[in-house]
Length: 349
Ligand SMILES: Nc1ncnc2c1ncn2[C@@H]1O[C@H](COP(=O)(O)OP(=O)(O)OP(=O)(O)O)[C@@H](O)[C@H]1O
Ligand SMILES: [Mg+2]
Image (cartoon, rainbow, N blue to C red; front, side, top):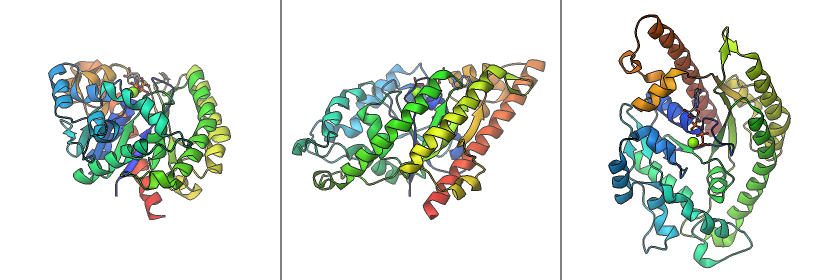
């Protein structure tokens, strides 16, 4: 059974896209079949996978309807056919990893979905929309026998994000060590329970149950947070960053965690403990990739999978970069193991 994991934070630039790509690649390296879903109209993930020199390729995937917007068009554009699985693209260099590309026009569906999701309005013609995204992802997962779907989301509190979050089995919250991430965590502590209450009601509504694409009853659960992109000094986070890392830990353990707990949106203490996830729910701390991120984007390859040739350095500089790369590989290796451990345990419970 596929596990849907949303990577969400309405704060922008916290590493959602980068982590979706790197984590998905590492899960696939471990033998899992993974579909990366680009649900952000910015289409950063699609460009990260395909490279920026592929304008024709992107036009081709729009034309061939190999993207999230075209996949949903039967529901959103009232076409007389059912939604079908999207023909995902294989990600070059990584067996078992697929991309469901994004579309810059995906945001055009936002307003219609927002109206459809207003529970007071039981307009018959809109009843198929709230369950359609989940249906599309499930159909696509079935077609490719996927173990995981990782959803890269846009940085906002849109109805599309509300829908994607509340129909996912799990979510990961990427953060960067700064004031804005702390503020975002505090606002999510208030918003996620409201979204969850909406989803519970939606799943009980007759009109949405009777739809061609019924709105599913799912309880999304927090796998954990990731703190990313800080400077290192003498092997540890530099003091100014460490202070914000500490503040994020407090915001998550004292405010977000209890709020999710009240709404049943956490796993059990035993499950977190089995993967050595502590009360701050931190799954991984990932420091600044430095020059590796530039190479990673140029070569459409995660930082940890770049070859020495791709890195293109020599002598001592290369040696230092390879050492850093080894650490990043370990970090992503552990992160992927934790994700597998937490999601497997959740299924068996
Ligand atoms: N560990 C890291 N070290 C250095 N740079 C990083 C790291 N993680 C992410 N970045 C860079 O930070 C920027 C933001 O990352 P990314 O695009 O993944 O964030 P995002 O949350 O998806 O952003 P958005 O909210 O706009 O979708 C990018 O330029 C990315 O290359
Ligand atoms: Mg992004």
